[in-house]
Image (tube, rainbow, N blue to C red; front, side, top):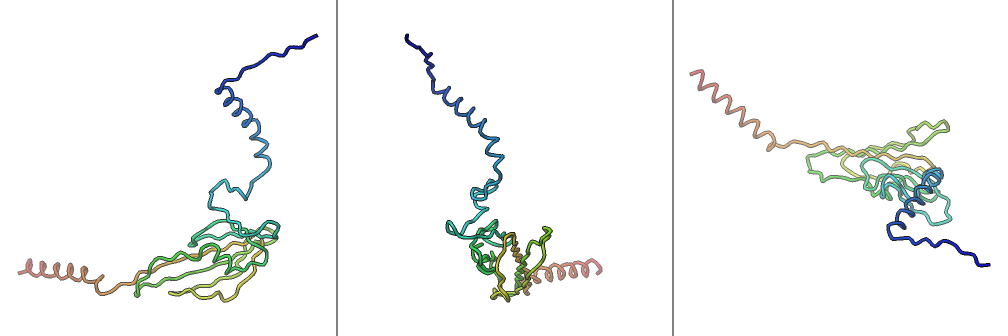
Length: 177
């Protein structure tokens, strides 16, 4: 007795359709597994991992005027100043001598009920200084860096205003004659 099985010949277009069907059937299973921080779906540059495999880590966020904002996974025991450095430090525009730059660093910690509490705050004017204190990071900490540049004025900035005012006075005197 000889068994015979039907032979199905697949063309290249059929292989593609079969592969798409398999991917669609597997998609709900992949979504049910949850969010994978190691492969950020929001941004390729939004997640940074600085730990070696097997290290105990914490995840802290750095936002605002930093070069690399996002979620940073760092080894346990990492300090706030190290996170600021890993985030690329504060991004600062060029400052003229008469301008004032204020850099404000705020550090929040997540409480047991999920609320954010301000743990550390430091404001620097026209300089970058060492942090007054350097807390150790915990899971869920948030670093926010704000940079404000207040542009100062010189006599050159007031010169066009003075010339317009002088022209207006001259015209007014001529009209009143």
